[in-house]
Length: 263
Length: 336
Image 1 (cartoon, each protein chain N blue to C red):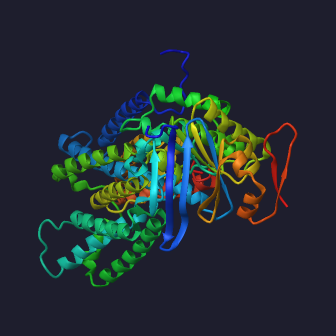
Image 2: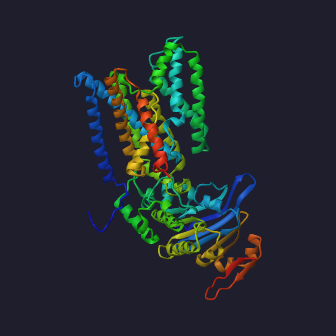
Image 3: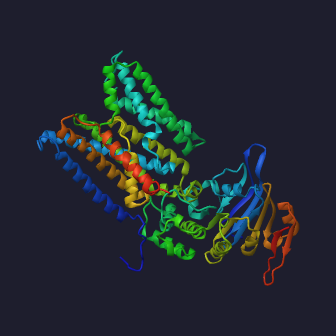
């Protein structure tokens, strides 16, 4: 590891443009550390999804550098990369009628041999991932027979089966009710605390992010407006400027982080 | 076996797969042998050998069509995909017809047999479709589908134009090829049979090795890529293998419809959606289905004396209604 602080995924001065002269990302820095939850917040069109695309290796940045475990991300093959970094999409879904267990076992792909066969070890690791996410009970059910929250847990278990050091999540709670939103954020917290994983989560929910994240990155127009601890970023003026609305911060008894509300 | 480690029923282990391969191999050999006994003159050795060769050719074509269909459905994430949708069969038709039309004006070299011309026509079309759908190192599945549909229409028109300039006597030959038939002449060209069989087995294995990646591809390109699939090269490699398999099947037997559509669907209903298992089972099922359909053609000839029906008629007549039944009863036959 190159970084003494244990940053496993870093992006520095990242730029990206779909066409020349229109930067969607304009010099973004991001550092994700093992055992920490990092939430990326920002207005619509601020470049969060593009940033995720670059981190995943799907989009090629026009400038800047992304390093995974001390090496340039583009030097990894998809298989090598998958062993270090996993991804949970916004909306769970599969084109084929797979059961939850089959989807989670498919997370072992990068660890299998040339024929892609499932070993006993693969099944043990998948089982551990299912225990962690509480998905064992519906192992035999199809994804479309599950509730949104259950399906999202299956997708997290699938990512976990890759045994990654970093997990990227793209608005994982955007289709969920408040109970399930809470469940997913608590799960991310446990993955960081108990499994030592670096979590990078793109989110629209400032309050949940502020409550569960160690660090926040606030984006606007392809730039990082504020980044750092929750206290540094949850600031009335910064938030108001970023989202273009007036912001109230409401203190909640017994909680260190105030509730953010748009006026 | 340690009892405390439970296994998942859906897990495709090497052992499970070996049992399937062994069982289905035995079944295929049994079907091949049994069907070779059916027909006139029973067991006369030279006629038996002839029927055995024909059965083997049916197996080769059946494996090609079924596996190519399945791979294409996985690749395009579309349950209605079929090898001929790439335009390969219509391209092969143009090739054959060009040969027939030219033969009326000049003497063609010996290598320009109709199966060779079909191969050339089919692969040429595949390359054109590929070039249309290929952009920035990636194969766009929707453009691929549309390009296939368009090129089919174009080739259809081309066939009509060439037919206009073809003598009726030659037209009969084309119609014979165009109906789709398991080649009964294959016994006279054992080298072609062996080479085709070897090529199909290799292609089958190559598709099988991509089964786990197909499973992951169902979760979307982003998830598949993050899970370790090189999505772009998977699409390109699969397209090339599928094109070769289809072109070979069409060049041997002409266009035989529905095998590539029906067989994977039925297998999916029987063994589930895991492509690793499905690719194995579909290949065997395609082989057996086509051997049985071809045997039925011979039997109908034996009973009625009206001559042999093209096997494409049997597969379409059994496949079409069955497919509609599937569409009505199961949402796309197990595909969401």
